[in-house]
Image 1 (cartoon, each protein chain N blue to C red):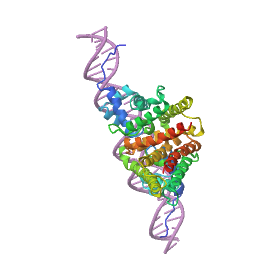
Image 2: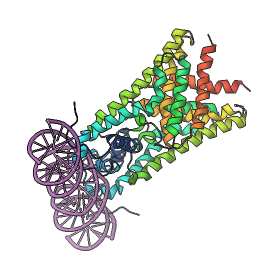
Image 3: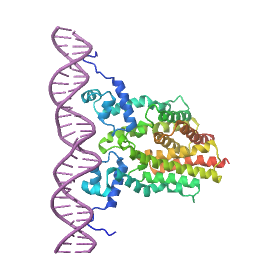
Length: 203
Length: 203
DNA sequence: CCATTTCCGGACCGATTAGTATAGAAAATT
DNA sequence: AATTTTCTATACTAATCGGTCCGGAAATGG
């Protein structure tokens, strides 16, 4: 389909990135349309709505882009060519580095992006909660795969691993937001992974 | 000083509890004065400001009350009559149970109460960040005490313990908010504390 | 009973919220 | 060049935000 008519003057991609940064730093609700439009190069409300539909649909698009870029640090969880232990360790380490990098807001958009929401924005909260649930499932799948592989023994303790790892993963968002550096988190990950080692050696 | 004049008609304490519940469930910014006044028994703006000063001072008072009540699950951290390991384990377990109890909002007000803030409410964000830093220091003090006691050996791995434990503690707020139950978190805590055990046995 | 003190209801403040309607200009296609 | 398409700018909703002010009512202490 040929594109006709006057093309928009601002760069939609750059605008999306600007919105991503704003939402990441402040979260969904406190980020106002005025801020968004300003960061997109003082575009008009009409241009904004023509390009993005609404604040909520823009946020959904922002989350999508986040998942396709920064969020790819979690990709190892679903890469079955990796050993389960490596998949989880890589995910944790890459998350730690990404969330503490200062060239963009710290912490995790999925964890922190819609913590404080009025009831009317429940759907936004649900969007991120579903994504967190996906992480939980990814971690659980790795542990299950390790049990199936014989890397881990099936035991009550092994069953606690997914919750333990997920809680730590999500907790990093808070620590990164509070200023922790990658090196400190990375060292903690090494210690955490010793739990896995001890369960592996027990077989 | 004798109290003269007409006494206020609503129960200030009950009103504070209502505000605590609202702020806990929704966070600082999305909780509007209208909601607050309504939950306090449809009091008037004048009554509200006479009793509480402003939204921010009310929030500070709410945080104070939270710390004096629900937040007391962290008290073991500063109880030097407890063995450091017990102090930390109790703090984790009591936090897990408190944050997952359904008779009040789930998660932790200190972690989740002001995640999404406009720059103009930075002071509110700072208030909670300072409290989280206090938790960090409390956990670190326990680990240091354990090293001084000889319960833990001083080692690079031991030095990672505070970050590991704090990250998990703060992560529980996210998991509790997402619906995890106390039993699951409790089991994960048992596994996490094995890290401590292995460092203790290494001496 | 009187005077004082405080509270309460309600009107009101300016600012900001997300979102819309309209009108005209600009660019691409034909 | 004419037409079509879609842009932009501006003015403008209605609602809500946190917060203030005032006048009258109510309860107290003397």
